[in-house]
Image 1 (tube, rainbow, N blue to C red):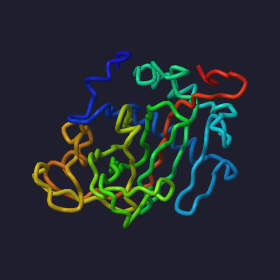
Image 2 (image 1 turned 120 degrees about the vertical axis):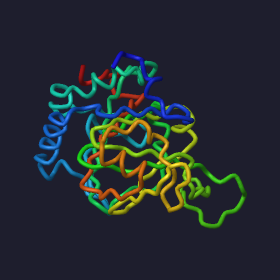
Image 3 (image 1 turned 60 degrees about the vertical axis):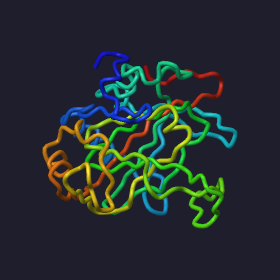
Image 4 (image 1 turned 30 degrees about the horizontal axis):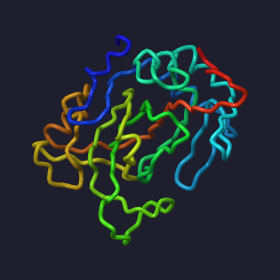
Length: 257
């Protein structure tokens, strides 16, 4: 794509959400998946419901990044850091590109509760999906003073369970979130083994909300399920979440060009 030409990928009626299908090729996806699955076990951090890796360094309690080298393949083939820079999404960020990556592994049935990324990062995030699809929901806080069913333990605020926006993330796609949907909203993925869609998409009546990027899908199975109604089974999905940490120890710049 042409640098800075994000407007053509903007999700309809969304504030600064961009969906880029086929951001990597099938061959590149195979290489990335092989590199990830070959990672030594000590590279993984086991959480209660999933495991992850952190690339680019760890952050202190004061939101300072202690930089470490990225995996070699991230800066070689495919050079994901450079490719994301070329989108222009991070052109105004402190380092003009991402310097921190979190790799999450989601097995079928695993998801992540609605959450915010926090103020340590520049308010732009790019997430690459590999291996399988996922439904990505954006949420907002309830405006009422009701304190029942509080979902966000840290803020004590109640999360509206109805998503304000839902996009289908196809394998090999990149989604970029900026502005208010990053700064004032939450995002999450349901922990299910399959996603069911009902046609027509303008009047879906199940638990799955309308898919905002339905017209942007390129996969035949995904497009058919969303537009005609159907079920997509989830496989193992790896998400690579790219961000720019503003404060870096010793004034270090990006570790990959």
